[in-house]
Image (cartoon, rainbow, N blue to C red; front, side, top):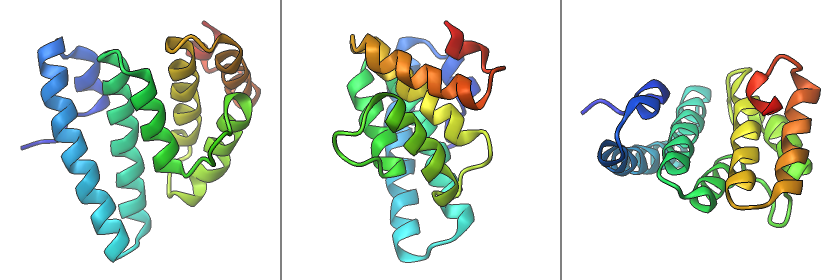
Amino acid sequence: ARVPTAEDVRAYSPSELEAARLQLVAALDGAEHSLASDFSVEAAQQRTHLARVLAMTLLRLGSPLDAEQTIVDALGVPRGVTGGEAARWCRARGGDAGCSSEAPLEMAFLLGVCYQKSGRTREALAAFEEVLRESEGHWRARY
């Protein structure tokens, strides 16, 4: 079966989101296994892409802490690093993780959304400010 895309996740109903979550978890597990046995930039990009779409799915399902953990695990953000510092880490580690140029910024933005949805306003604002510092045109980080 085809793995859901970001566009799919935006359009899915709640019941479709749960099925997508299960599919994405299985695909991410497979990508991590593949990456562990035979590293390649393409495999790293695929893993990071799947983690981003899974984080989006988890946010839509109302699980910001699970989404945050997915991002943190995918990019190797150290324990205790949050807010703007975590957003900077996402951007810095994004290249190491084989991300496309916009993926680290998007992961940093999603991390801000995770903070916002879990009631950590100060950390969310710091993450969004870090995203805007890198890309003033990132309109979603303004809101």
